Each structure stands twice: as C-alpha cells, then as structure tokens.
Length: 175
Image (tube, rainbow, N blue to C red):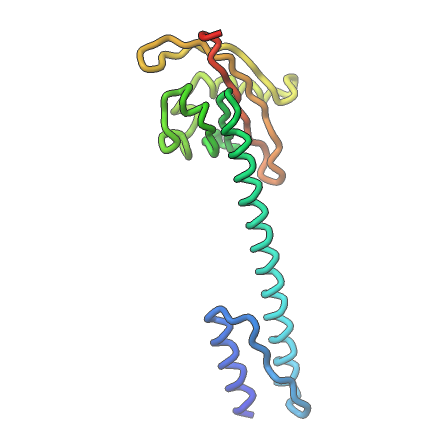
C-alpha cells in the first residue's frame, strides 16, 4: 500500500517542478491506486497537450504582432490601436513622429489623456448609425506649431472582449 503512494508522491513532485513527461506505472492488483495512476497519467498528458497548444498560440500571436508592426512601420499615416477602454496598445512610428511623442509616453496611456480631441472622435464612432466609423479634422499645437490632422476612427470587434478602436491620422497642414 505504501509503495504506490510513494510513487504518486514522487511523480507529483516532478510535475510540480515542471516535468509533465512523468508517467506512473499501472500495475494489476492495486485496485483504486491503479485507477489513480491511470487518471494521473491521463491528467499529465492532457496538461502537456494544453501547454503545447498555448505555446503554439503564443508563438503565432508573436509572429502576427511582429508582422503588423512591420507593416505599420512603413505606413506614413499615424496609427494608434486602442483597447475597449481607450488605452493605447499600439502606436506606429509615424504616430510618434506626428504627435512628437515617444512610444513610452503613448503605450498603455488613455487616449483621452494623450490626445483628448482624438478620443472625442473615437467615442463618436460608437454610435450605431455610424457603423463603427467616425472622422473629422482636429487642430493641435505640436511643439508650439499649430497642426491640422485628418482623423479617422474605426471601431473593431475584439471577440469576447467587445470592441477596440483603430485611430488613423495624417497631417493635412503639409499637404
């Protein structure tokens, strides 16, 4: 009775250290402990499959993010990605340049704090009659210079999380 329990304890310790490849021997005549060993082995295999699926999904998300960043780095318009709460999750280099701000001063901040005029347009895009889009021109003082931006905000579905926003803008002052 003690030997199978000790095997289970050792196997559980290995799993706790991250070794999901551990497998308990399944022996006849151990009754409930045999069933426990079968279930333990099934559980560790299932956890290992789920962990592998999560790693694969994470790798794919990282690759997609890098691809999007590469695409956005070549776009001359400023692009800001917002979560459903209006916090900036992505800013391309053009957005940084046009707003005269670095990525650290944009990322994770509420658009309403960074550029409240853009946030007003984003809120307008939430109206059902606009089908998730709004656009306008905004005049901002950037480094002491008055600049006019054409701004377009599109509300984007983010699955179960609701909606997020994509803000695109360019400086019409220079056109």
